[in-house]
Length: 243
Ligand SMILES: NC(=O)c1ccc[n+]([C@@H]2O[C@H](COP(=O)([O-])OP(=O)(O)OC[C@H]3O[C@@H](n4cnc5c(N)ncnc54)[C@H](O)[C@@H]3O)[C@@H](O)[C@H]2O)c1
Image (cartoon, rainbow, N blue to C red):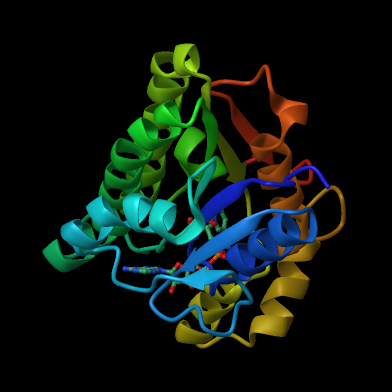
């Protein structure tokens, strides 16, 4: 019961990784506010749904979570979008969407959550970045730059707020078997099962990550087992480098 008495806010709670994170936190004693566009199918103590592209929604969410749970100890910035295509093919709308969800929202949520955590004596924030934000891969400049910004934000906040007892760290997965990956294959005309099978063969451990394999590392960083970690970028890649 690593999270007994803890109060958590998890974004992207309806998604592949987010659902696992919420379930694990609750199984180990946390009370959780789930947020997504519609998180009603994820069991949680409260659902505060909305659009992370709305600045006012993001600014108010940590305070609303504190009101719902009586405090806020943990924030998992997990929501994200992936935009594909080299720079000549992406649009202004792609830019606004990618930076809005992957960078602006975690920025606003951290900015609002940190004073609340500081007042409560400390806390932990886990950002879900990507290996691709640390080692740029081909043909995804928007996604790569957004995750690089989130990684840099994590390092800055990890340093700036350690003195307040607030640990800020990031998980950087390579490919994960979630709707994000599978709908991308489907949109490009591939059978998602066959495409995942082909990807599995490229990973030294023999398979791309399942959501629980990423959620385990997110909950580790949120837990006291990681009590001396601040500003870390943990790559979780099954031995597969960015190609
Ligand atoms: N799947 C992968 O291969 C992979 C690899 C590395 C990193 N990641 C990161 O992991 C995180 C979780 O992704 P996932 O794979 O579980 O994908 P997912 O698509 O299953 O979940 C992402 C969730 O974010 C939510 N979201 C997106 N835009 C939103 C908005 N404007 N307002 C509210 N909610 C919004 C979606 O509704 C969705 O439920 C993301 O940050 C992603 O970039 C995923």
